[in-house]
Image (cartoon, rainbow, N blue to C red; front, top):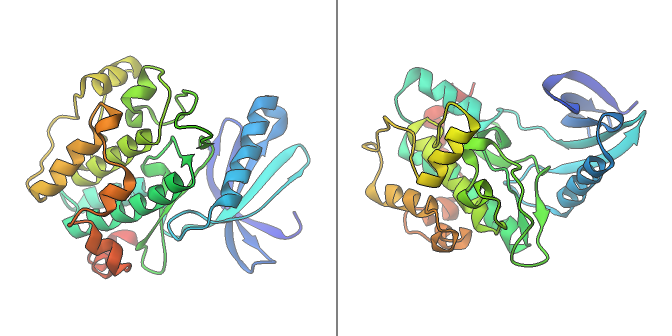
Length: 283
């Protein structure tokens, strides 16, 4: 721990804390995720170790970078890249304070980068299982770079399907998660569809007064009411409904999404220079 100086707390959970720290070896700010081993089961410890194993496999510009992990004083620590502009959840909230929509270019920039990260994961047979606005981060000098993070629920596929498990934010669960079916890569596609819906409407896609109500709305396909699609091209709305198809076999895969004529230019351009129109929101 002598190599790190704690700057502040970014978040707390039942079994640990996420802190912003200064890494004296790397000479920059990083994130330290600390898991209190004595507070969790042996199985949960194995899951934490599995997360580091997955992180070490990953090398992609739209995925949070892993630096190191170690154990001391009954705590397990994971050192990761610091995203300087916070979560997508916070970005959308700030946008909602000054406007009733996010400009289409900005929406497609975020979505295309997220989909690129998911496409990379799926090609190496990793399912994320918990894609939601709190796990999507913004970084770079102007906050224009999207980073997918939090691989605590992720799983390496040894076949086409993975054991069921509700490891995600309730309103982002896929129908197959809700009813306890085996999960495939298309569960992640449902979740990025939920993120696209959130970017377009600034509302979470499925809502209920209780978990049971939320699950019911997902299973019935009842989206959050009072939304306005008028600011977006019909092709984008059509894609949205394809991603939120309750039949996973009917959802497009990530590679197919990236080949859409209105998504492809954002991939080819690489830089999302027009994201600067929202620079004041990111400050």
